[in-house]
Image 1 (tube, rainbow, N blue to C red):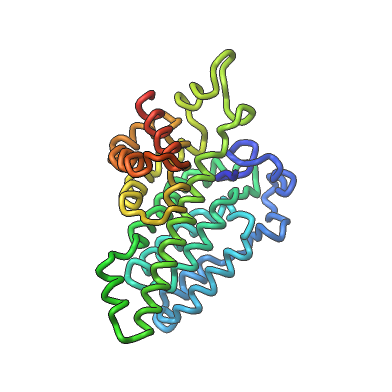
Image 2: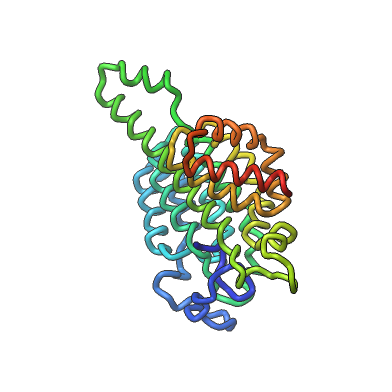
Length: 298
């Protein structure tokens, strides 16, 4: 599983530390974590009067960033990255569905550890992580399953282009939801192992997580992701997205404050419904029942 950051002072994997420069201020010297991405130029490209309608170029620029940072975004780039993501989400909400692919790629990279160039990067830039998570999960509001009546109307159309467009949109919306579910599952799972969680002598691991959580779970609590996740989960029709989302919610439910958010968001009724329609037994049933047990126990 992956983490939100990769330094000894943060929530990442120590295996990344050898790829970092010292705290001298020098740029990262690894090809997969470049220090020279010009986010301001991309924002200018997307908003300037003469280039704001060149949507294909916008998407290409974002995908190039994701390719360059395929093993993780830099922590020091979090602030401009959040602003870029806000703009991309806004464009998607306005009906520019061509940005769906870019959002999928941003989400995929975001499931990798964020990379520090200095030991102090988490202290300096880590406060942007809840905002990043909140903006990323807000995409779910614009990637919900397409209503049956809209699909029926498109299928009844005599224009094959309309049929193809609605099918592509349906597929991309589902892909967005799956990618976000996977990223949340990665963030939620990281740090739940015995050797990465601070446990008091003779204290069970599950009790330590319930009381203090993990750095990732605390960030997820601050980002208030469960409201958007609950709304999306209520309408979810993709079996793959359902099972991945349930896995993320299960791990979140181990931390008492997130368990309370699960209850307050209305997810309990959705979990009961999942159990009711899967009474004959399945992985979905087992995970949903485990979430309910965790919430009731905590």
